[in-house]
Image 1 (cartoon, rainbow, N blue to C red):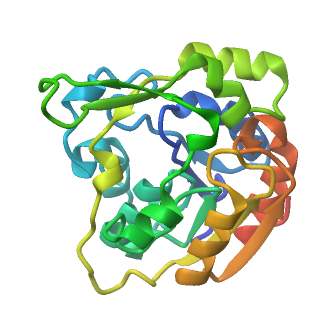
Image 2 (cartoon, rainbow, N blue to C red):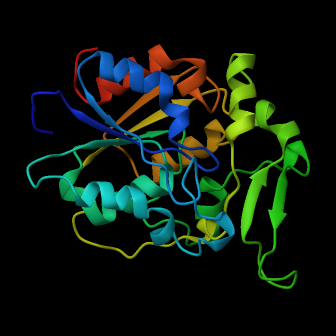
Length: 255
């Protein structure tokens, strides 16, 4: 990544159901250190106006992120973080504009979901909690679901169990359904996927993407570095200062 007057440029990519709002703590820490921060809402997430039931492909879902990356000057490289499949998608298309991709307890599979092993390693298995998802079938009951949401009664215990209660309460008011087409995502193999460094940050008390799944993805597509946090799935709320320090470390920057 190139030095610019306002510091380095971080692009914070939210995960399923979330939006740009989930980064407010980390964004403040990064900007206070002199860095530039972009937090796009992916299509149908956050305050983006699209209906998640209308998003039928990863290309539609990631369009706001791709619009941001497309507009970057040729010399500028960014550091995208989290957002599993979306960050991998960006690596396929904009690898030359990315210095380091940081995956925080996120799906990290080079070609998306293709095989049974991919599903086992990358798709959260929440069956131990019971019926956690609320599905909508806008194309009719005989067709696959069009959107998915995590039921409110499961949100804290799966996503935020180590978070301050105020943060998980706020999150429960802001979470939105996400497009159901995304778990079937596949990417074409392209040259240049390994242009950017990758760093994986493990979360050892994660109830969404369990540590065994995280380890399996790390073994299958080894990143350049692995860092560890003793947190739940949402360290952007539960441990923002620790996350900030690890993001700086992953980016080879001083806090």
